[in-house]
Figure 1 (cartoon, rainbow, N blue to C red):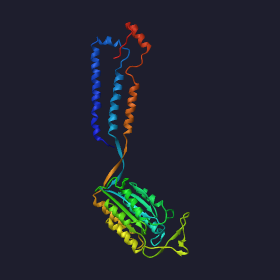
Figure 2: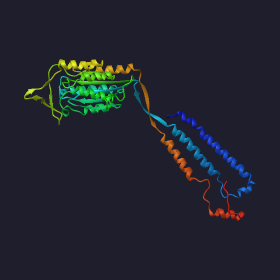
Figure 3: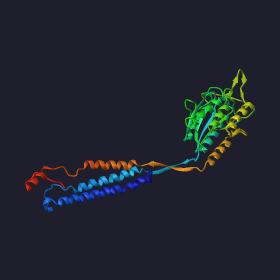
Figure 4: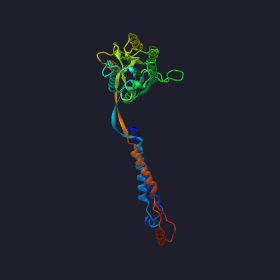
Length: 365
C-alpha cells in the first residue's frame, strides 16, 4: 500500500486538534453548569444526560476527518509494471498490400512473411508507439498507439484483393507523415517535433511508385525529423502472381491477362527509387535475401536508437483505493446527522419532572 500524495498525511494532526477542542468545550460546559448551583440539585433538573451522545457524535466527526484525509492522499497498491523509454519514439509501418505481394519468392509469400516479420519486430519493441499504413493504389492508416496489437490487427485486416490496384508509395508515406506530425489547414505541423521525439517510418514494399514522387515526400519527412527505413521485399527475377480467391483465400493458379502470365519483378528503377527514399532521411535500406525480408536489420537499428537515448525506466501501475476511505467518511457523517444529542422527549419524562419540581421546563446538559 502506498499513497499518491503522501504529504497530505501530514494533515492527520488536524483531527487530534479537533478532538482537543471538543474535550475543552465539554470541560467548559461542565464548569459553567456547576456555577448554576449544587450539582445534586442540577442533576434533578434534567431528564436526560446528553454527554455520552455528544462524545459519540464527536468521535464520528473526528473519524470522518481522518478518513477524508486518507482519501485525499489517494491510497493505492501496485498491480503491475510498464516499461517507459527515455526517448519518445513513434513509428509507422507502411506496408504494401498490393496483389504482387502474393508472390512466393519469399516463402510462404511476400505478404505473409512480411506480416510475420513485422509482427516479430513490433512485439519485440514494446517501448515504441506503433501505428500502421496499409496501401496499394490507395492508403489507409491506424495512428500510433501504446498498444502494439492495434497496428498488427490493422495490418492483418487488409487483403490485396480488397485494395485498388497500384503501388501508391508517395501517398502512403504522406499519410504516415501526417500521423506522426499532424498538419493544420495551412499544411504546417500543428505540433512540431522536439529533440526528444524520434518519429520513424518503416516502409515494406515490393514495387515502384509510377504515379507520385515518394522521394519528394521523403525530403519533407527529413525536414520534420522523420527517418525512413526501407525494406524491399522480393527478388529481381520475374515471379508469377498467385490468383487468390477472395472468398476462400486460396490461390487458384496464377494471374493471367489476355492469356499471358502476369509476373512481378524488382526493376533497377524501383530499387533506385527506394534507395533514394532511405537516403534522403539517412535511413536503412534493406533488400530481401536468402528468403528473408531483411527486417532484422531495421529492428537492430531501432534498438540502437532506443539505447542511445538513455536507459528506460520501469513505472508501477497502481489500482486506486481512495473510494473506500471516502465511502467510510460519507457513512460516518450520515450516522452523525441521524444521531441527535438528546433523545426524543417522552411525556413521562415531563410529567415526572413536574411532579418532582412543579416546573414545566427541562434542561439538557
